[in-house]
Image (cartoon, rainbow, N blue to C red; front, side, top):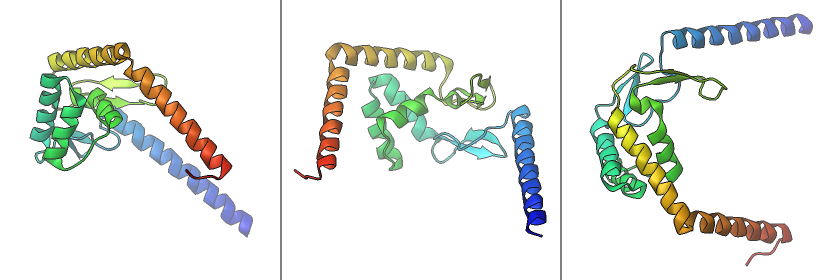
Length: 173
């Protein structure tokens, strides 16, 4: 009897897996957004729409970054406007998102992601996207030339090494 129940459970698991795959494929064909909507958007029946409560705030964040070239200034403004803090990497990931340019992406973790442009209103216009990429590239070069990238990575390495050695020895300083 347990074998029969196990066989039914395995069959149902396989059926459920296939239904999920079929649903995801149907959503891909309909070019629906998959996952959590990026900041500034809401998901309405699988399609991204500007969030009326936050759209203007995020436009100001983009404008601040374009004017100052500083992710710190843009992140501070976001915190002032929404009350939410943003880390450097989270801001950079948000800024690189194709969704902000009006595109839906499927298979972003795979080898050949599909990009469907023009699916919703873009928060970042094409000329702004190009300007943002220029700012990011200039900031990266500027950090590399100043030696801060190297100093931060070396300091981080030694801090982690010392913390690991302290933990391993059981001593606290």
